[in-house]
Length: 168
Ligand code: ADP
Image (cartoon, rainbow, N blue to C red; front, side):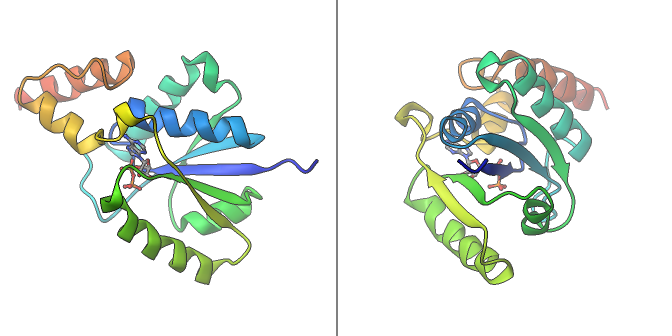
């Protein structure tokens, strides 16, 4: 059987248990998973590009279920990166209908750019369906406990980042 490489792209600002759920589901289907951390010029991330790559790498490395998953930072078009890595599939998570419109636009655009790469959508476990990196940041900034929603390493990274910010 052909080896199928799948890319799981995102901003990962920061990576949450919802992202990990999607990566694990993808891993059960495809032979090799590359998590692609995007620069994302359209958003103003809390964590820098390098920090997001490093945190995501650290989280993936410390999870035995994610053995063999690789993490790479991606600058430029995702579809070009996918082609370079010989990936056939891009996997995205769909939480709610609100994700759908944006994903549909992106899927059609990606198809225009490269017809050979398919976008595939996976639904997370229901308990993660409300979770987003933005909500995590909001909760954290307002003093809430995020430890049930993100890996320990992310809590540590948030402590370091926000702690440093508040002293500036
Ligand atoms: P982007 O800016 O590319 O949307 P995100 O890091 O916000 O990057 O999300 C990356 C991918 O992970 C998207 O497909 C998004 O729908 C999915 N995702 C994010 N949070 C969750 C979650 N809680 N459950 C399922 N999928 C999720």
